[in-house]
Amino acid sequence: MDLPIIDLAIFFLYMLLIIGFGISFSFRKRTAEDYTLGGGRLPAWAIGMSIFATFVSSISFLALPGNAYMGNWNGFVFSLSIPLAAIVAVKYFVPLYRKLQSESAYYYLEQRFGPWAGTYASVCYLLTQLARMGAIMYLLALPMNALLGWSIPLIIVVTGISVIVYASLGGFEAVVWTDAIQGIILIGGALASLLVIMFSMPEGPGQVFTIASEANKFSLGSFDFDFTTSTFWLLLIYGLFINLQNFGIDQNYVQRYLSARTQKEAEKSTWLGSLLYVPVSLLFFFIGTALFAYYQAQPELLPADLQSAGDKVFPYFIVTGLPTGLTGLLIASIFAAGMSTVSTSINSSGTVILSDFYKKFFNRTPNQKESMQVLRNASFAMGGSSIFVALALNGVTSALDAWWALSSVFSGGVLGLFLLGVISKRAKSVHAAIGVVVGVLVILWLSLSPVFFTSDGWLAFKSPFHANLTIILSTTAIFCVGFGLSALLQGKNSKA
Image 1 (spheres, one colour):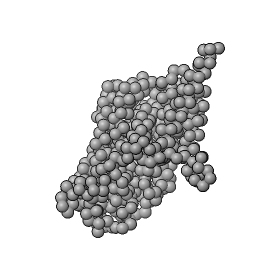
Image 2: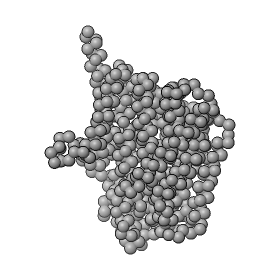
Image 3: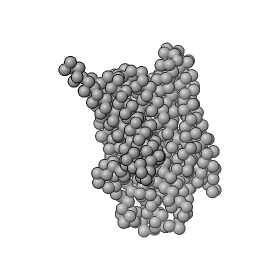
């Protein structure tokens, strides 16, 4: 479709400015610590906005409205768990990592249980980041496909390379400062979009609430204790586990704890980034609900082939329902959301590869030049690999559901390993290793049995649980098995 010149100008100007701003950091003389932690001199508000921008990606900007459009506010329950996880983070995780002073989130596990534990956690983290970046790049391509008719694979490749360039060259400072800018832009874009939808209703803004209420769109889901479907309780527990994992063992967040000047500023930034996401995610769900009401009141405005394509409804509205100028701003906002998260994942993945693989298996004491080369090469490699993941996701029904399922599997129950190390002082490496083996078996059963076993004869081997329970049950299995073995064997040794 033809896009007004002013919208194209706004979008491309934003892209050029943000990429140029990110690359500008590469001209500064920096050490490897500057590249990975910003030299520990970044202000709390910028780090907090960066944490927020890491939470808010194109998964939030497009998939949350798409989820609300197709269903209700059940997915918002995930956000309600964030304040609970933030309390734990500020009290326990931030002080722990500030004390350890290692740029790797998995240094603690290596010290506690041995090199295998750190390597296992690092591999799980890298797989999770590939899945996340792939989902985000795919969602970035949807509005441009609707706007210009370019093929989704082409858009994925072009935008992926753009983010890789400034994230790989600019380092952590470029990531944080561009995150801060992009966080402000995406909030403004989302608010502007909602206002246009509300005041474009034939009978006024109140009609949104009338239509949405009649369709039960504001429901948070069933409150039954049923863990085979996406109930309120399932998503609340799932969200708590995912967010404890984010704050506790996710390299993206740990690097931000360490980049603040003091522990107090690290705690402030954690509160700012986490609590800001809750109302903003609510804004995204409300946009999806408002879109539902908008197209219910004016069904002739939405093509039939898009009525069941939730992730594509918001991009379609952006290019057909917004006034000139705002369309360019919204497209820039979507790219702001996606680019900030992808750039964060690229930088943190490079840090993990240097700390947990290169220094461990190749050269324990690389010089500054060698470290910088490894960081940049690793960042380019992870970013490039994520482009192939995005291409593989092309055509999925719901990018949000795909991301949640993949993140549950690739998490590897590492949170259980971390909690075992922190809570149980008696747990040894062998207890943790057996727990991890059991946890991996639980993951394989939960994720593969629905594919290979049907209800025709092999029902006993098929998991009846919802896919989001994978992280919960694998985490619980690792912790309980490791804790139980340490207590049991300790008791036998005491009697002997």
